[in-house]
Image (cartoon, rainbow, N blue to C red):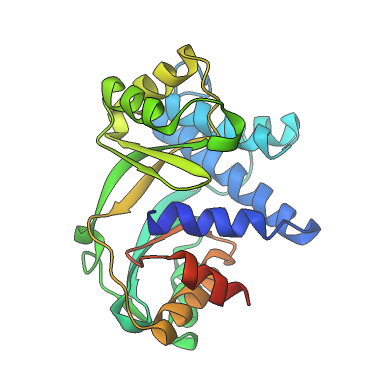
Length: 252
């Protein structure tokens, strides 16, 4: 399973306390604001990225007034400072490539926080372009196999017929990767067949994964977790191959 989605599955299963939920709402609101601005519309029917952002916010019980406030900020209707989407790059222990998606109203603060986190956790910040070439933009649809009675093989064929590039299956989930521009069509194909979707989003997928030794892999996971906990960081992608064994050791 890909490093990106496997790691986020781990994070979800750890649960979200009140403090983390507040942080989650902040990240969801920023995603809505960026989607509104980039899509040039506060109407989810006209702005697919915004629709996905709103669906994710509602799935996490974010109040409607928070959602509307984030949309207004994206439309420039609020007094809050404008947000911009920036990518940062670097390396973790074992040479793991790390790509960070941030949403910030203060580049200097965000850059300083990210650089300090790399340096304190065995990583090294990189220059623009140093690792970005190792990733490609994709659409990702995640299906919880326990929530559907469909056979995984049937779902794989359905995904391929709908235009998916790749399908990855494990015991619990089915991941469908496609070109970002095809995400809406592939997503709708599943919905038309009555298949429940856990999540649909735009991601940066590593072209190839690496398996450093256990010590470096665990250290890389700790660095990724620290980066994700930064207020301005929306998502962290890596080319670390996160195995079930690694997950067990990280949780122990």
